[in-house]
Length: 347
Image 1 (cartoon, one colour):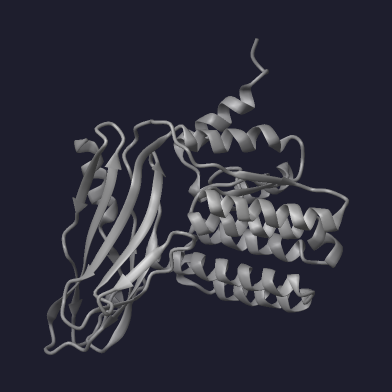
Image 2 (cartoon, one colour):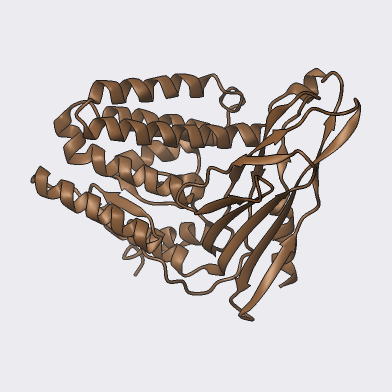
């Protein structure tokens, strides 16, 4: 399992933006990524299709979404019959490539005064203890070559002297190796930042990897708020919330740099706004589509959503794949989708 250690150690290294000598909130991205080995898994995904019976559909959609949350799986919205085969292929491609179970990411403050404020982790349970000195994120199972990134908000005290370094975090990842059935640990070096008296323009530049994850978390929160408003019948307020989030997204450094994830996020916001045009459209497709988006992002795991046209548009915008959150698609999922597309085409 030396390959696992190398990849996890590289992936766990936090990436931080520049910080000045004054007290501030730092943002770090932590990303555990298991090595590429294949084993069978047990998680499940739930699917929903459109229906003309809106009251019945509402109950089915909410029930399926709740079931996927309880089972640890994703919620897929299938809008056309052509998507059914690919949706199952996507799910099976992930389930057949589980490489680690009981994955847990632990971060600890590495300096006096540095406190962990929050860790937005979606449906992954997180715990902050010891008065902000330790944070734990429970990831459960992870697929081969799956990449999950988490923002860690820190309170950093003022520097006692200029031109020094401050150690921010120590990180540890533990998981059960399916080959040996043993509990493994991977540690990374302490993450430090320079504390110059005055930051140079280069040092003031925002870390794009941090910014893209900040954008993702913000977009998901906006979609969740819009969905709440839509359920109350306030579609205008919901669309205004999403439009404001889109405007903010377009001004972010990651968007200005042409980042593919932020381009994908913009496409998803545009699609959600469209599906909230009328209460009828929201009832027929918007509710399920929105829940699928939220499910995928909350687990950072790919799920199918919409129809083949929607998939094609999102794929073009994100430059990744034909899923509603293509950035989460693993190579094994892509290979299974390829087999699905070729099924029946060759003699």
